[in-house]
Image (cartoon, rainbow, N blue to C red; front, side, top):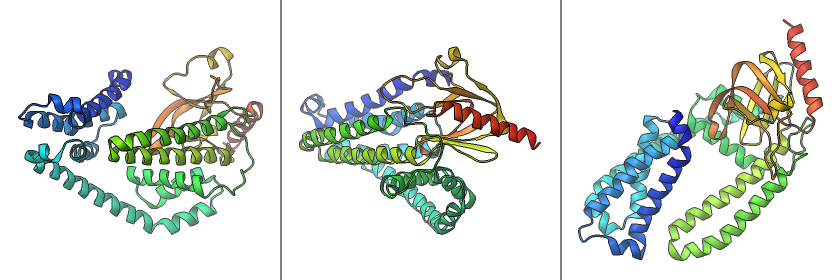
Length: 348
C-alpha cells in the first residue's frame, strides 16, 4: 500500500501513455505507417492493454480493488477498443468486444434497476429532508441511508443530485446564519477564473479537435460542460452551507468536496500551536480549508478520541484522527466548540 500511495502519479502517467499510444497507432499517419501487414498481433496487444492492463492501473491509481470494478473496467476496455481500433482490424476479435459490451449492458441494466428502486423512495426522502433542521448537505445523505441500503451507485446519484440542485435550483436561496470558511479568501474568484479558463479552452480545443476526431471532441465538450456545472454547484454549496452546530454535533463541509460530522464529546483537544499549524498536514489529518492563490495555514486542529468518518467526493468515506480548520471567525468558532464540549461534559 505504501508503494501504491507513492506511485499514484506514476499509475496515472502510465494510464495516459497506454491510451495515447493505442490512439496514435490506429488513428495517425505515423501509427498507420508502422503497422505490420498482419495486424492481429498488434490488435491483440491493444486488447490486452485496454481490457487487463488499463483496469489494473486504474485500480492502482484509485487504491480500490473490487471484483465488480474489475469487471466493469474490463467491459469498458472492450467498448473503448471499438472506438480506438478500426472495424476491419478488429473483425477477428469481434466476439471478444461484443462480450464486453454485453457485460457492460447487463451492469447498466442492474444499475438502472437500483435507480428505479431509489426513485420509489424519493417522496419519503424529500419529506424527511424538509422536516430536518440540518443543512441539506447533511440531511439528504442521512435520508438516503435511512430508506435505501447503502450502495456506491446510490451515493453517486446522491452526489449528482447535489451537483444539479446547487448548480440550477439554489440561486434564489439566502445563506443561513453561521460561520463561513471562504469570505476571507479569494476562493470564489479562483473558481470563476477556472470556469473562465474552461470556457476558453472548450472554444479553442473543441473546434481544433473536431476536425481530428469527432468522438473525442464530443467527449471533451461533455466533460467541460460538466466541469463548469460542477464548479458553479461547488461555489453555491460552499456559500449556502456555513458551519452548523446543534447541542451535540458540529457539521462542516467544503462545498461538494468533503463534509464531516464532529461529535463534541469525541474532541480530545484543540491544537493551536503556531509551530504545529505551519507544518505539513500529516496523513491522519484532513483539512477543511478553501484553497486559492496563496498557501494558508489552519487556525486550529481538532484532535479526536476516536477517528471519525469524513465523506469525500463520490461518496467515498475515510477515517481521520484530526481535522485542520480555517474559518472566517476563528475566535468565535473556538469559543463555540469549547462551549459544545463543556455542555456535553455537564450532561454526562
